[in-house]
Image (cartoon, rainbow, N blue to C red):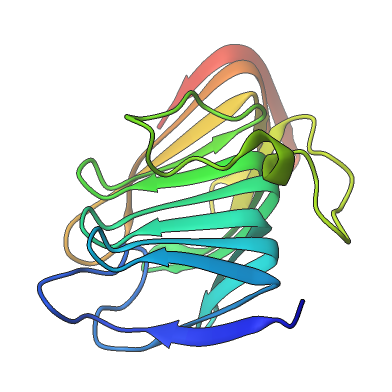
Length: 188
């Protein structure tokens, strides 16, 4: 099927995910789009990529909930986030941004469903056409160093998208300059 291309901008009281600049259009490329205007839920499947300036998120499936301002990328998900505290790149099986807590979560395995919204169908999440090798752990690389774990949370400050707190859970490895740290949990 032909690629769906489009852009989203704030309208009708709906919001874009707080990872993005509210005044600029965000572009999305994918093989298919399912959109429900009543709820503001858009699900892009097959080689999905959302981008705005230097910020980009990709995966087999990307779901955007414009009522809540949430975003989820599932299936060999990758991101480049242009934050106030510096550029952060990441990879995981699932990347989820929750606007209410302003948290970006990188997970080695997909998180459970949240009230049936923002999740991908099992067939879509299992790997679409052109999928990269499945991600075995979450990784975030940026000013804090090169961090690997089963789950990594980045909490963003309001309103400037700087990293307020970073936490990593289970099988944590941090490489920073010439130092290495290993443990079960990291909080900074």
